[in-house]
Length: 595
Image (cartoon, rainbow, N blue to C red; front, side, top):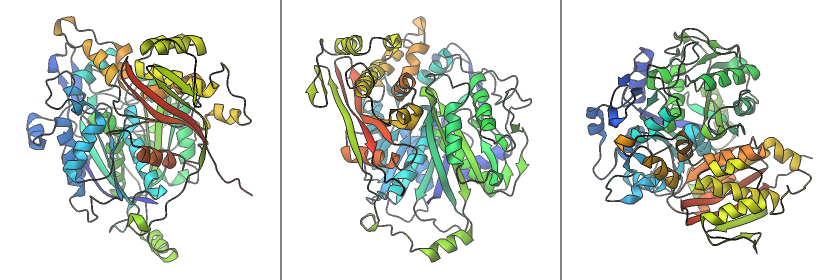
């Protein structure tokens, strides 16, 4: 069992979780209408830190984004007694765009635009010594990071996980969502008949997880978590809510739905997201459970959303409250769900948190209050788990490699055999597509990172022979028991630079939606899932540098999910059209079969 032992929310509504919860309960919001902000020609509505708040958080030698993250983490850690610098502490940073506002600026340290190196800078400021892990999984990044942190603790590799979700807004991000026609000029209306789109917001939120419950008599525990892909579209959700449904179905195993106080939905107030969520909620049998959404208070805080909203849900149940959905008036979705604009009361002790994002990704967790009676029985039945890493039992995950591939600008090897190919760099990838795939024209719309991952996965899955490898368990593979877990250093930097060109000139401003959607590195996992109908887990991680030990830990932790039996994984970096590497493999876990 993994427990929450500390937390913080830093947002325009307040600098602590208590301040934020009090503001939300009182119905406050800092969503405001902006005209001409950052030179953006179209007006928008968003929740932004004030200049006074930004100045108060700013730390010498750190960017606005990094300062905000450090501020939140320090608030969360102020009463922590464990050794932050110990080898049993892992730091996970959930973010969609990190320091992207620095891109194109005169930078004394160009490495600041690499999220992994920014996370390392933050780690050093806090005093964390282990390798930081950036979770960049679009809008589900925060929840993905919580789930990954829990798994790493359950694996036995660490005793404590510091998870921070954060994003700041800027010209790059706002213009991108405007190009997709996803933003509403007015305050958002989740699940409402008249909803027109989402608002965006800034925030950082930190949750500290541990294998021990701390000093609280009724601590919070993460009871279950799941991630699944729609395998439908990179920027639109499945109409049937397939990924969200699979997540809900998985996390509710062993949970009595009558014990649930509410379902906290993503609730972006876009036409398709809210509709999809309502369908998934009804489809899994939660139509009679209260549903709420919190975007009317903060807007969509991107990589912070999953952490912010999970912490507010915990605080609301501590207060026996079901928060109302600000902006909601009349149900505007087809799924039969219970939603209210006013707060309610409850005596129940657990909730469901849902979230979804670009690339077809969906994540869900169930969190619950653990009673003092349960803690007493736990301490009676078994010895408390030692906090020293060397004394803790580590789970050993065994798996076999089915196929492996390495693609470099100058050539390809598949299972250690050189593959016949022509050209160099970007031309090499195009020739590989023509020779070994050739029937998926969407390839030509992809960014370089997605093209590289797509070609590598096609050669892995078809073993370079033009048709799927015939094995006895391909049916299970096709139905989504395969995860896609990828790592890199440069995030989506090549696509970021291309998109920046479309908004850089004020007099020639043409933000491109087809470019913007690929400025999320996890889109490559979505492209692979869509092509092959894979509904398993998809996730993208960014590291300060390639680190096989950290990568192995994440892969092992992912296999703790019994629904996953195979995985496409490895390193995939695309700096530019002449500098890239895909070192990927198809692996299958070895599980003991029940007798």
